Figure (cartoon, rainbow, N blue to C red):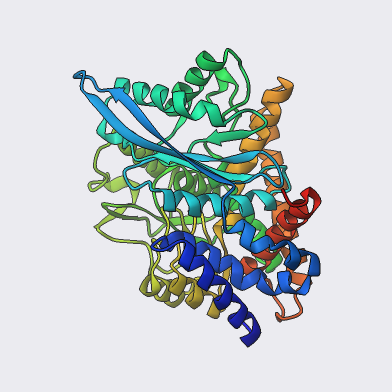
Length: 452
């Protein structure tokens, strides 16, 4: 970064820090964008006059509400719920709902901010939002989860709609929870509309929605490899996480001929020196579904369990962090570089700390941030919205083909933006190009709207 952009960024961030004290994740996300786009804004008189970046650092609105519901023993339980509607400049608000004890307004502000830029890069008319609650599904029974979802939607329903704000699932909110939320919305509104995505097929969901983020991650990785004159076949890939993104990324990578050599969760690491087999992936998914330990894999699956381990440091060609935000610290990044990794693409949202990002970007590694690499989920959510509006479901192959096309288009958008950046040498700075391309699209939309 040049001295001028450094000064401009620090001046801008001083004001943002003063307005948002203690919101470290949100501040990290805003600063990442500011460092890449501040000179774009200052070089465009219209962007500068409209104060685009400052406006994007403030969500359109933050909604908070109380959720009161009875547990199985008849005791009254109280949780907090939120919806951060960040920007609808490009299209209606779109973003997931997260149910976890770690959910806070600051976390949702960060995620909503990132969602706006991610959605802009898909080329679809989708704005950005995020929501959720401090409710922890794993601590409750099936019937308690249903009651909570009904109570949550009783409050959220006033703020969403099929052309206003369309939530989806996220951590703690899967097809089961989406079904309960959708049924509650229908009961209150007497309407069968595409107000939420991630539904099961029989109530208007899309084929491959569960797989979409993981599949899209691999399709974007393939585009990165192709741009570098390489192929995914035979590549050694380390993956963190064992949720939907990690598991389906592993499935797709294996299907395309890559060797997935790790998956991990909070308990530890499963290493597959010779690559994961479908049988190994089936066993992992079954154990996770039954909430049972993965510490004793059958010997014939070729898996080694390392308690408390992470995949960073295993020899690899590609690293895909797919667990959670800030999971990769500076030491982990050093281990990834030392392991010979040539490509890193984020399956999770902002899984690298600021220090880790700097180290990776200073290396020869090609690095793709989550806002482009994991955009497959929202892309298929957009397809689900379209299917709901036209009452025409798409086949799995149609969805898969369209998802691949969208991820290739995202890569082309970023590649074209990188080609216009005279401050960079050969190659693609994926993070910088993604931030700048997304910023331009949202900025143009805000200009077209005028100031309200």
